[in-house]
Image 1 (cartoon, one colour):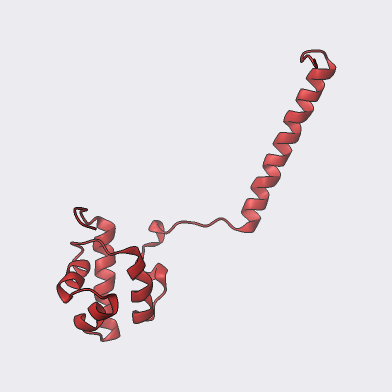
Image 2: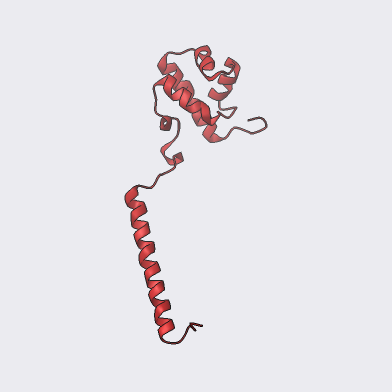
Length: 116
């Protein structure tokens, strides 16, 4: 992205790209062709100078036979809630809403809230 500075995350991703490329035994030219960028642009990615485009990560993952998450540190990954977590939270919300409804109903019965 023009005008955007690379971050520490970009630098770590660049280190990984370089390491994965070398481990796979691929040349900079081969990887650059797969990404449809110049070899100098790939070097900038590897050096952490330029930001890698998000749509390039799956290409690199396939090329290096890696998982997409291998390009990120565990603490950089978003955690996705499980169905059990979501269901538990929904159950808690349901209980709270029932309590609120019960309090409103009791207040109406006690005349604290007018019904008209």
